[in-house]
Structures are given as structure tokens and as C-alpha cells.
Image (cartoon, rainbow, N blue to C red; front, side):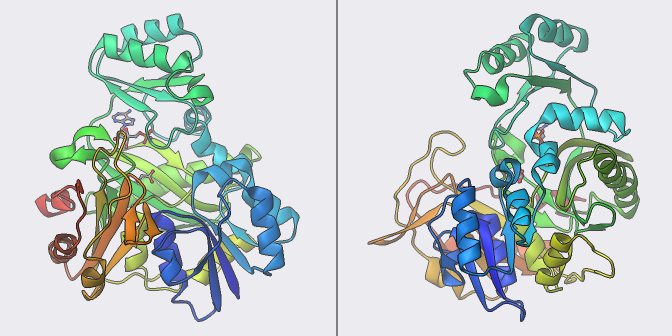
Length: 423
Ligand code: AMP
Ligand code: GLY
């Protein structure tokens, strides 16, 4: 079978890497891919939002399964379009992807179906938003309703900051149309975890637990990023927390989406805030997390292709997932300036040396092929991901890999996985 992976980041390199191990697959294409996916797949220069281009390509190449990585093509209806043409595609349909594409929708859904989450309000007018901020007090969290590449969330420490964020978003200056509605919510404390599950709209099969590191600097300091590193398993997700997340978050959400006429098929990602035995949902994503996908897929023992196919065909009946007993840690290497404006075009050295390390994969994210070799082309450039018998061993191995790679201005967190050790 031929498989098409849509996307070009670290998550898609990990998907290609895992899919390439399946005996069911003869050939993989990745659109648009990156120099990492090019080692295992044929990259095709079609943008993720070029739905017609992707459809024509998939028909022409007789693609047996298309796997959609990022949220944008999901929210534009790529899976719906493929299904209308009789093609198998893994990912949430447009009506289901709204769970990520609109935070107002997702909060209202959680409220309606008793999925535990922070108290909130949805606003389109500054005055009403300001009254809500005054009633709630600070710190308070202001979120753009629509897709904002992980940057639409402001944790305001003062009234002025909260009001400024609201004005910026509602005026359209900050995130364009994505900010024309805002969600304002209570600030939650605790430890975050990423809880992912495959679902066919009825059955729910959880993936292993994982934790992301959103802030740019060590100790969770500095502005939020798309994720500076991740590890799996995450000990904060104890068996009791797992049960609770399955019953109160996943089950209620999947059933709620079905009841709303938006049956959810694909991978559902809940960002959880865990505090003692309390589990609250910060957000939903309609896709694999990036970088969580990298350590999760390195730990996955089962062939992923029958699982993705079962979801695409609408039934997970009989599907089980086996995991390696090992831990996995992914350290993201970022370009100077990220998560703000960042440098591009620097030659990356050490990739060949790192590739020789056992139980370690350097996943490409923001890289590009150039005459002088592989150069940086995005904010998050690489995800150095390693396995280990323990989280500590995986951390040590990942940082051994990190030490081999460099370019001018490269930066990364030195404490990925530390929370797991401290537990
Ligand atoms: P979101 O995209 O909604 O998950 O928000 C991005 C990040 O902002 C989360 O991973 C948290 O670190 C933080 N965050 C979002 N909502 C809250 C909240 N209600 N309380 C505390 N932190 C939050
Ligand atoms: N790592 C967070 C995300 O994928 O949204």
C-alpha cells in the first residue's frame, strides 16, 4: 500500500518514521515533508492547505491511506473531501476539528457535557470582557477563539495586561479573525499532561501518557512555545488520574461530540491540568501533539498502520496497542529568537554523528535542504528523541545526541524530563 502523510514538521517526520516500519507499506509520500522525511519517503511539494492538489495527487498515485498531521487541513475539511472521493484518510473531519479550531465551541461543549474545565466566559465586546476580568481577578487567562499556532493564549498577571490582550485580540490586531472572539478563563495551577487517544467515534483507545514543556526556558520560565520537548510515560498520570481522564474527559467528550452530530474520528488530544486528584481540561487538539508524537511513536511497539486504517475505516473493534517498556524523551532544538522572530538559513552540523547513536532519532522539524547541507528554516528545528530503560537514561541519551548537533544561535531547554525524575 502507498501512504501519504500530510505535513512537514517533527510530528510528520515521526509519523513517516513509524509508518516506514510497517510491512503493509510499500511507499510513503510526504507533503510537503522536510529533509528528515526525505530519508524515508518521497517529498511532494504540495502545501497542507492545498486540498484539491492533495486530492488529485492521492487519486493519481492510488494512495491507500492518507494521514493528516496538522490542524489546518483538518479544519479546512481535508478528511471530508477525501472521504467524498472514496479515499481513506486518518484525521478528524471538519465538523469534529472544530473542537480545536474554536476554543469557544470547545468550552461550551465541555460545559454542556460536564467535562471538567476552568470557569470561563466568551466575549466579542471589550466592555463585557473587562467586567468579567474584574469579577474574576488575576491572574487570568485570555485566549483567541480561533487557530493561532499555539500563540493565542495570554496568561495575564495584571488587570492592564488582561485588558490589553482583550483589546488587541478583539480589534483584530493580534490574531486577525481568530481573535474576533475571546475566551477568558480562570487561571489553573498544577502540572500539565498531554492525554491522547485514538477514537472511532465510539470506542476510545488511549495512547501512553506524555508531558510537553511549553515555556521556552528552563524551569517553565519565559513565553509559551509550540513545545520545547516532551517525554513519555508521564508519572503525573497515575492509574487513578488515567481512569478519571478516560471517564470524565475522553468518554464525555467523544459521546458529547456524537450527540452534537459531530462524531469524532481520529486522535483526540486533551491538554490536562492535574492538581492532586483534580483533572481539568485546558484545551483539545484534533491531532497528535508536536513534540509529544515523537516520544510516543518511539515507544509504540505495535504497527501503527492497522490502527490508523481502523480509525479511517470507522471501527477500532479488536484493535489493541502495545508499548515498549522503555521511556522516551524528545529535546527540541530551536533557532535563535524563537518563539519570537527567529534566524533562518544556518547550516546544521553534527547530524551524521548523531544518526550513529543507538536508540536515538533526530526528527527534523524546521529544516531545509540547501547547497551547503541541511539548514535551519523554522523556529523549532529538530527534535532529538531517545529511548532508555528509565526516564533518566532516556534523558542522558537524548542530551548526548544534542551535544553533537549545533548551529549559530541554537537553543534548547536543559531540563526536559526533570519533572518525571522529581516525582
Ligand atoms: P491552550 O492552547 O489552551 O492549551 O493553552 C496553552 C497553554 O497555556 C497551556 O498549555 C497552559 O500552559 C496555559 N494555560 C491555558 N489555559 C490555562 C489556564 N486556565 N490556567 C493556567 N494555564 C493555562
Ligand atoms: N505540543 C503541543 C501541541 O501540539 O499543541
